[in-house]
Image (cartoon, rainbow, N blue to C red):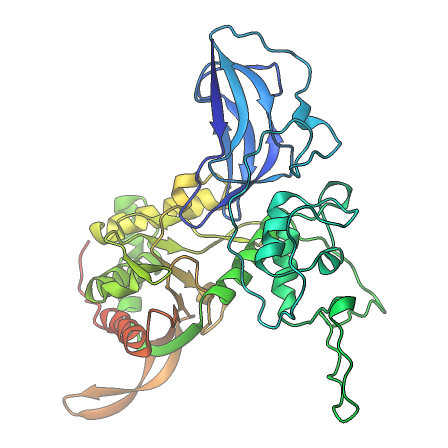
Length: 448
């Protein structure tokens, strides 16, 4: 007899947790190798977790809607004929246990969690040992409160979205992101203001919203909540700087208009501007490899593979970023096939976890929505993201052998947002200009 631990799988370099959407199998159910046991979701993709062995589900440690860190044990599978009770495991009971999960769960003690420091937090009494509040807090929440110097009195004011009003890690992260714009003082820490010193104006966490007139309250869906958290985290993590260039893509546009019908007949693929943009980006990364990096503390992680993420819109209105692996090894036909395949599977919600992993640089096309330029937010843990705007016909000065003339040209803006901790203006601006030069120098007589 043997028992196999089912682990929450690693879903990508920047993904540290996943939400359980549905248990397909319950305690006592038999499973075959590669049979789906549960469905999980991250901010990027929904996925199924298959069974690594043939056996019977013996224990389940987490419930639907629980957020679980990667590499944690989420279930036990008994193999080789081990007897398993068909009654639900203690993990699905309703009463909370001392570790912040449900009764019987065997979640290991959480490791210290790194969260954004509050910029204007006032001194408070840190939590240590067992909280003196009547409210229940898990060890993970207590650990975050201790690291952020949050008193038990302040912690009692944090709204909880978990079962029975429990405070979750997500609640703490939301509270900390707003805490930087407000102050909290425990009753014991209040100090009398001298008569000669005017009291500081009271600040509120969030402006009051008026519900007068015709209004409708719409709850964010799961993906939109996770995207929102990811975007706030990115802005907290990286000091963003955005540079812009305007480029003449007339040769590129004329070439595509000339070959697109024959290209589809010959290769069975529609050619858009996106693979051409990606080709120029990969060439420029070869010239400026320090754009293709991540930052780990004070260590610069230089990526040898050039994996380009392309932001794609989903039917729900949310965005997802599938990744073209080793894009610098593909010719324009290969890039076109990869772009079309990933885009179509994104729209059909058929992307696999590996399709969104290991990106090193991201391209987003704001021109799709008719925008001429944008200031995109970095897709962590990358250090740069480029936006391409809409192509517009404009009068422009053209240098000829007979002198300068004004002509109608196809013009577009490129913008690059970059992490100023590691990418300075010289590197960011030079890289962006190089992408523009490759696009302007596109060979109008090129063959596939």
